[in-house]
Image (tube, rainbow, N blue to C red; front, side, top):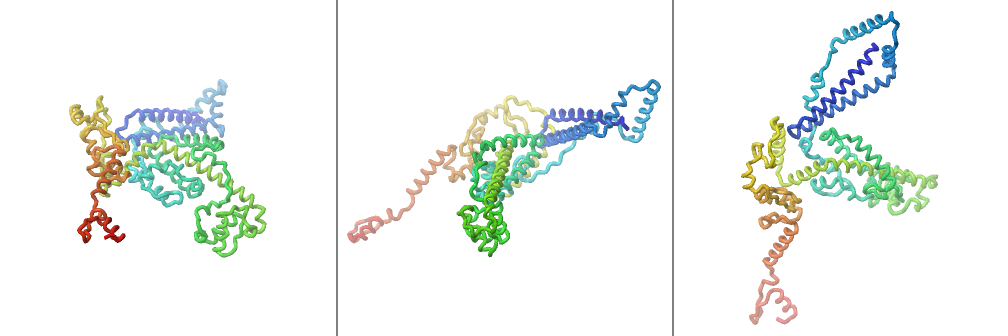
Length: 508
């Protein structure tokens, strides 16, 4: 029926208004805890998706590709003949009744009806055990990929978490490879997936679109961070993406690639692909130290010498395109790392803390965090009156002010060894010398965390004290050359060093 087009338009506009009110009402509610805050964001995200879907449906109606809306409006605007007024009126009334008879389940939906269920649902969000419901990143797979790659290096997981976004430390010769590009794509894919789970209201598409538009101009001007004047620089050696000669130091290493891969690499450079595997590897290894243009003509296949320049040009263009793609992925990854800066810091601290814990202690701590998150009740919705911003006690309420003053919790103690971490109160400050953060800092300095270093918070003071302790240990050490005594036939006493010198000279 034609009248359903205008009715569908009205219903869609009504749904949009209702969804907007629900989103506002949900955002005005203060979440009880971090888990509830995450659920709130996902519920609002679902509402926004419904708004987009409904808006798309409205756009299709207004585009009116089938002409149904135009026909409906024309029927309403056409001035009927006096005799046809009642006839058209009853025809439309009949259509409306027939429509409701066919759709007897159709009814008025109030604001507190169907869409209200959106505010009650608990979104299903998947997190790994390491991610702790969005508190930490789980970079173990990426860490293993990094340390086992040719551009990576061996390091602790905690060090990797703090430096994985610092791609400028990797040389450009190692970056311009397909392996490095795949590694960056894996990082970007994980960070994007993590952000969509923890911050669903972030418009990542808008962020990436803006980055791409800025990137094109920066790349043309050679101003991309970490790639200054690198984007348009031409290389002098054509390298097949699958066989990068920079990574091979001998013919034997190339032989391990096999005959087919060597043949493809030789053909891509216009060289002969025949012979044994050893001969192919030797022919390809010539390009390790000799430019393609200076190679002897006998190594080229027939008719391929004239096309070497074209191969050379195409190789350079493909490598420049690869560099450009890698630079763009790096830019996107760094932008996501800026958004997740607090999460990265928490992940690094958690990784350093785990170095001092046993497996049983880590499992107990993880279970404690899960229980604590599940046990947070709706009572936390009530604002606690705490104008002095006192620390919370075991019952979740501010401690008494006299207790706050007694323990000196207003005093701040900073420890440079712990990364300038602040400790409030003398008791917490004294206790921290035996905790994991201070122990990890001392281990990084290469100093044993003994009682001698209590009350030492400066890195310079700790190093100076350690040097003095080592020097004293050296003085107290038994030195046989100087302390072992010898007596000659005349009864003179010498230490071993002097005695052996005189004996060697024939004086005794």
